[in-house]
Image (tube, rainbow, N blue to C red; front, top):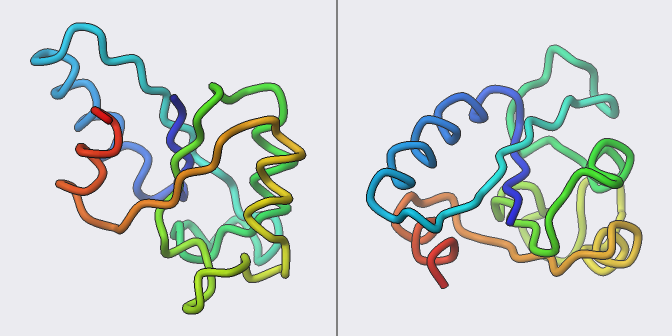
Length: 113
């Protein structure tokens, strides 16, 4: 599985995945930092990553399951800030997109699911 996040959170998530891998040997999770081309590279938070940026940067680079934080979607949870739908990301990348709360325990449950 792959976790996509903003540039700011990627190092911490990689560290946490490495630590979790010490406990669960069969844990294979890749963390990819998504550069914000839509709003500009100085914007590094996951909450402003757009669907278009996900599609362009993750094409051919993701596992069959892609996890994203719920902060990437509008408050209604129906689309990204650039009006791309979660289903568009799934179709374009050929993945199952799973949206998880921005919460460490929820993320771990989703990874171990």
